[in-house]
Length: 76
Image 1 (tube, helix red, strand yellow):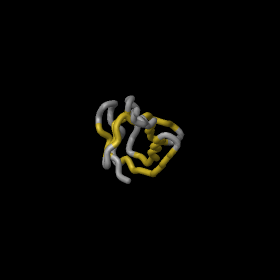
Image 2 (cartoon, helix red, strand yellow):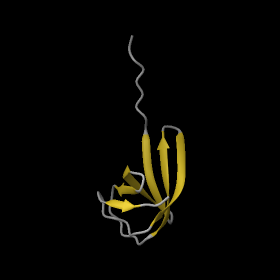
Image 3 (cartoon, one colour):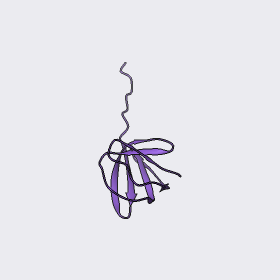
């Protein structure tokens, strides 16, 4: 009997002032963006979607956004 296999569809992005920035990696106190954007310290909102379930939460970015592949500090 074949096992039930499910691969979740996961999408993450950071919303800042109407701009949606794809997140490559998310940790408890950092995120890594997929692409580089220059932006000073600000506030934003992380959107995490797993299949049909979506969660949003506000974060503070106390430092400027880091280059793609580098950690950007977040505080929730």
